[in-house]
Image 1 (spheres, rainbow, N blue to C red):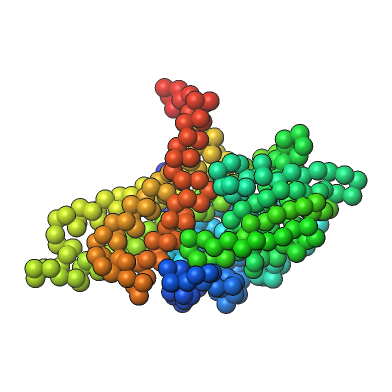
Image 2 (cartoon, rainbow, N blue to C red; image 1 turned 60 degrees about the vertical axis):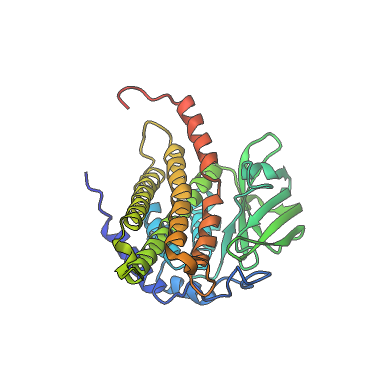
Length: 380
């Protein structure tokens, strides 16, 4: 079996490295020293650079101006974004464009997808529902009438909601059928209430009161909501992987230079063992991420449905990134808590990623349910 990435996937990675090489993780004030948001908007200069490098249309079909690549390519780019704590809605916008391409009408695709690729239209996603614990589609009701759809409900912790143009949010019909609604963030009846994330970014609670949408703005295809959830989860794991790799490299550099009793810290067995454990965590995070991204991208059959692989990837990402930043802070000593050092920013982002779309325990429960419903046979 060949586990190497394709030439197109490697080219996307190289393009991402070139763009993110100019990004400083401390380009905004520290969240630890800022009472409100670290910035009012995401990094627009970086967004334009991503558009210029054709990285905003990775998953878009060539007929709409895109590269037509798969979720693995997106996750490779997101890994590079995670290394530098890139403040852009790359994951959310890419996930939304993929869902639109697969489930929207031809007229919607032709209108929106080229604009997304050029960086002219920014779409974020809502995935936390009312509380962050229940399925996101349960938080909003979508009622159909002769003029389209009416949406009522609440979505909390929506990222980049003050910089995006539209939001793709899960909802449910009165008979319990999940749908996805593409709503302008300035639509009548939709109000934003500021929330500050662990990373210091400006999030929003969205309250919808009879928000009216046209029929093409609501995606009713079966499985669309689950497709969005799986891609967002894989992308979150990719961001965590890149962040963890950057933190481990930072730790290796520090312990290789910092001396105690006349020897570099890295030569001490206790330090080396802890760093090796974190390296193993990152390898497991990578292996489970690529397995999950491959499953959702190809639809290949397996012993469990693709959501099983996604759950395993998120379990490793949540636990692995937490252990990695904790070990890094321990081995950095006082520098680990110094707000003049970038490590504390990585810790804040790691905590946000650990809990996003469900912590490890939630995905362990989901995996247990899948194993109960789909018992493995001996040949599996």
